[in-house]
Length: 563
Image: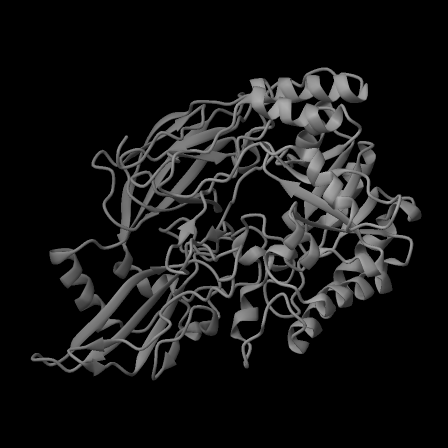
């Protein structure tokens, strides 16, 4: 519902083209189960861009990066045996890519520029030169794209502005345009001269396909920012010399639900999950604000260098402070365990399975195994095994979640595991136990409200209540007068620990204020309604002593252990 608003703000910035990703996992969440409605309605989005007289550069992957879970790959790819080699000429992987593109590309083909639509360019892969050098893979993608889109479409790649990355990622022999990206602090023109070596003569328009207006932020870091003046100066050095740039990001938005990605360091164990917010310090803020120094500075540069007329500056969307909301504890996790876990999806195995192998792609998984100890029985429970987002960039992208090895106690390997899926795709007002949808996932099975006896797990609950922290559900309500305009807001979770929040059955994402820096989650007005609004939170550790949340007007990135 905010697509038009954000596109108009991009147009008022002086942009004439929108570059957008197509996440495979949004459109094929389960094998051959296709989703093109709601958030996933790519055709409506493209037609809207055309109605607003904007062109489109479409990045169809199959890998997109984008700080998006698994770089846009569907997690079920990780369950295939033998294991796929993602982003390669692996025959099974290519078969699945072709099956995906066989559905996607015919949908966008009528919207190509040569067919009267807005799409002027289609990107092949994404920064492949930073990952590998499998030219057969890239060549196959080019052939596949042209099979469905025709030979007139302008295909392009985007790679870092170095000799090695361009050598690995450019597809010169297939007449694919090679664009570059680089740090905003780099001198662009030596990189554009290098770019020419990887394009055909006369076909190397200087293009930074990712001009970084800010940067991403992980949990536990300070919020990443760049100054308006330095960003504007860097953009001017490109545009005023007849170069082109795609603002990455013009508008970042929000990682609603469980779709945020993650990164690693030098090893796969240096895991860093991305925030729920993808504000990116972009000129169009997460909540659409354009009355900020960066938006105004970039707008002036675009006008000065290109002569683009200055459209009127849009008004910011109104935001409201709805105030404090008192939450009530609805239930401890094990009190309602049998009502939120589908008994038909409980996995039983001699060894613990990954989340993906149990069919649990997002959210949480509870692992339980029995161990014969001194008493009649002992239970090893590893609760709250949370998928905080799969790695989306680098060599460790094959990122399965859950317990991936055997488990031992006193040198004894545990067997006979049960794994209980807790996706929260099915969780509503906890007093009613009705379905909740996480974004477009409408295929989840309905939870049985008649779960079998969980005697041993209830015993575990009794143990946890006495000795540890048990996850708990809290619910609160706030009222919006029917005569009032419904406005955007933010929920501040100061004083809470870590968990997931839902507003009117919509998963607004993860909160983790004790780690920071994000304190507040964005709640767009279309999620809200006149009358009663319901907030449900799943707190994994210790709740706010006051049991309150605060609905405030402004974002807040000042939380964390040292703040």
